[in-house]
Image (tube, rainbow, N blue to C red; front, side, top):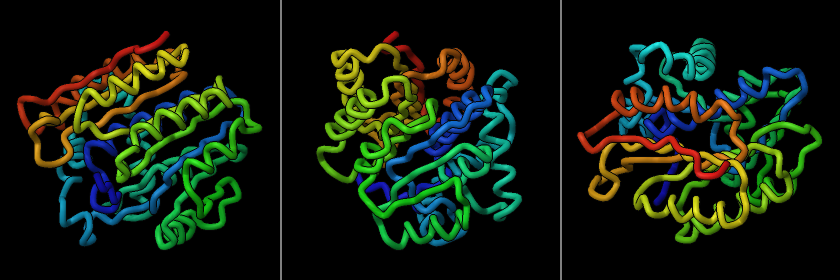
Length: 280
């Protein structure tokens, strides 16, 4: 699967990933100590939904556009950090833009919080650095994302989040994701690790969950959003997040979000969700 993000910005997968990212950051910021966000595959940071790439697929019309009207109140409480970040960033960059995770982090991180990310594609790396500007809290490296994660764990900040968001272009990406998740967790056993993945074959995420359990991960949850049947759909029909060491209230919070979110973003009657504890 080739997942060039400019073609998919603002789609249902972004909604789930960025809602979870913003919620975790807001949770961590309930305490005054600084946090660190490490991202393996940062992307360009800001996407124009009116540009040719996004217009070609129109996936944002089946994603963020469908959240124009609010969900029920419990779900909106979970979405609040994401909605506030999106609103502020669009006010600054234009209503037809959609921010990637680095821009969401830039809006949310405090003066003593830090972000380090990697983007291996030269033009995209330049785009991200230009968009972020001269922000001393942020470091974006032109190198392989898996190496960035390995080299910066554990961070000097005692709390934070590692986001693995690979493009799933390589045939062994699932194996690499499991290996790097476990390697990161072993280096930083108290850190939060969030891994995004596409759902083409639901058994793949089961194998990932089983691998984490067999390795001794003590706390993990799985969030999955299916907007269509992954086994028969002609385009991406589902995605998931595997989260190691989630905040203790996260599963309950997303239990409130996932049913109305899945109903709102459904493309067919085969839509659905999973929100479950896999360890802990």
